[in-house]
Image (cartoon, rainbow, N blue to C red; front, side, top):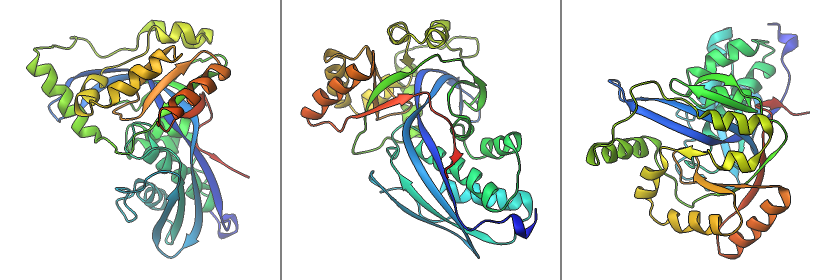
Length: 308
């Protein structure tokens, strides 16, 4: 890397994600769970601007409630920037301006998108040219959803969710997402799932979690009706138990034209699959009229990319 390669400012955009399918295995000795997920990157984006600095710092703004998002070294994007600097031996720092549009603690991977954007932005800012494989190695050290935010598109995640395989998805899938004003803690949702399984003596399969082949066939065919028959989230029962009020909104969406609805990831964001853009717009209007903050998004979209 040469000083001539360094630029003044880099803008990177990274998408939020939906879990179209999420199967959770039993809790492991280390407290984590193996999962099998079908991810789809959707058109709700985080924007990160990186500028040279003597230290590492971050400012936050956006259309979502930022309460609970750290603006110091605990921020996942700052941790990502430090990883790149450490990897290439960069002696300076970076200032990150993050504009957030993905719900915070909403199960859509907003923090992971920030981290992926920071990896790409610092790589470009410092002229590192680390390459996709190296950036993915760094991403996997930051969290299970960060590699997917780098990749984008549609993918199957296994292991902790970070062992990714691209999945063919033909055409466009339209979704209406309903964020919640108050987030849910991912560890709390997993712990509650474990408690519910123990309480109800619900065992899990002996084999590793796996994505329903019906999901893969529907994605490959570009068929939202077929996809609606197979989408599932094992964390949904726990999320609805912790936040019972979500059930009314879920049932309203399913009564109002959605092909199917589910909790996205660990929640509390709800995602409703629509048959086409027009149906999604109609559903968005109905849900908005009932007082819900409904957003029309589509997928799949590209992962973290430099803009301009």
